[in-house]
Length: 176
Image (cartoon, rainbow, N blue to C red):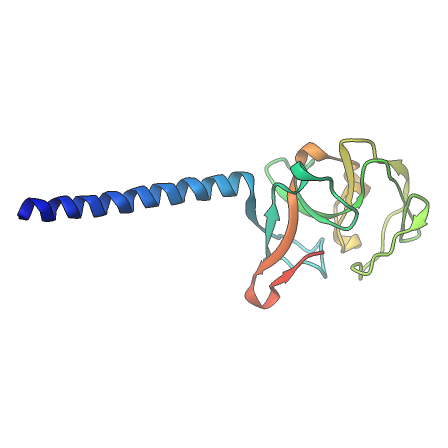
């Protein structure tokens, strides 16, 4: 009888270990290929995102589709490769972007930007966005180091689309 109890206990421990290993493998796969949490640092995306906000990033978004103007993306910094940055997509492949007198022109027309509360910007000459690249800018234009300074962003450096602010709980919301 004692041996049956020992076998049952070992079987239970084995099941717990298998469940934990499976959970860790699944968590690793999800974080690597599907979703990742990203902490916003700095003020370049005010008022949309604040420093300390945590967002969920869909890493499959651009494997399954193309970025669209207005989406918020996380990417490897072209200036400090060890950092990830977050900005808004302004121009996609085939677009022409220009900034003149604090107004962004997309394909020759002023771009409606209700999310920009601080529009002060340097002027930028007309720039064509070729295939494989994006034009990105922060919502807080005077405090954002973005495509106006570093130029076009290679799509290969984009990690995914930020779609949800999940922390702090009081800031929980979907991003558009």
